[in-house]
Length: 212
Image (cartoon, rainbow, N blue to C red):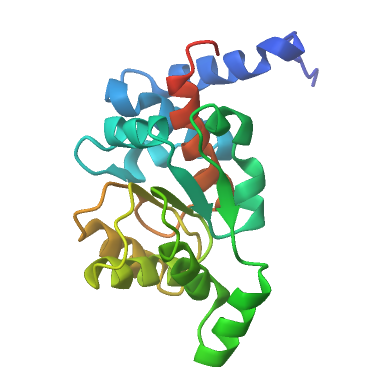
């Protein structure tokens, strides 16, 4: 059987990918405010389930963009997630990307308290005097600790991107975040990952960038 390849120039590969996604979604209509976030998650994962499992709090896209414009920083729970976020685009608005998972003080606190590094890294983030967006793609314990910190009124995130992947307490941790009054974008169920957390951040940044 002959295999036929599409003749697509390198600069057009992403555009063509989004055309294919749109074609395969068929007659399905997506909310215009959320469309590019959903499609970028599908583009990153080749998983069309994200058209159904991404949940958005009311007005979250505009709230997230306003926070970024006001210099919000992004805290991730993995170095992979941090690496995947377009830091140059975020820096245009005065924001930075942080991941505290490899910090010695975080490791020491986690050991002393018998918690995970992800939990301890959320405590460290809570001590920052800056507006924060959390992009959690790996550790449900990070989401659980964020929920606790919110309930204790020790932190008020501008946005929580809750997309950890896996099995143990993954579904439950996402449900906790959706019970708060904090703006959120959550992937219900077991699916997610650091790549999805980063791509949601990038989708927001690219939607704000009229030069792209």
